[in-house]
Length: 282
Image (cartoon, rainbow, N blue to C red):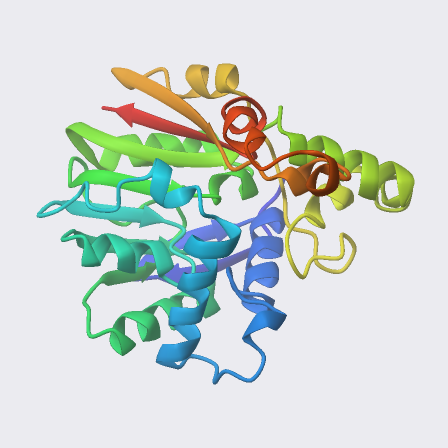
């Protein structure tokens, strides 16, 4: 795809194609973690950020703190690729990490900066394309990216950049949408076939509507999914790679919350969860 636009990030000229423009449009309009549940709370206030974090870890994504050790980078340098409004990066910071973050979305950059300011914490944040990371090689002990690199057309290039900036022996923690997930199958059947959005929007448009605020027409972020086998090949330069499948709720299966007991969630999660999480050592 031919370049559509360019912007300057900390002196680095980054070419942005149509897919990346759609990502910027999506998350400038609807920053990650925001929604109607924040109505009545001042935008950008301390309460605003704390409510987003509470919702993330206690309601929508309770799997995260069970799967990811937010204290693992204590005393070490950690880069987050696609920092969003800074929720996870702040949590790593509170766990003792020296934190850095990059994002291509201006509203994310603005909100993450404010989030750290509201919490009296420090971070180095840059508007920067993850296909051209504006940091030296062998610089970070950890690179973390959650739910981001399945939205870019150059996922492999971005992972290569993550490898470059990691120190030897450093760890990449990467989570992407999982192809063999209950959520994806239910979305295709429920939204795509029963509600006929697949025929109206096409597969690309249908997948875009997974993201809150996207309609698959005017706002149409790229949404890809990956299997463990695909990721193992992509991560082939890393010396050691382990995987964990995460995030399954009964609601991911039609009528599951009615007919399935809560106890089944942990068992199903390891096979048909919505995220495939890779732990890759350089």
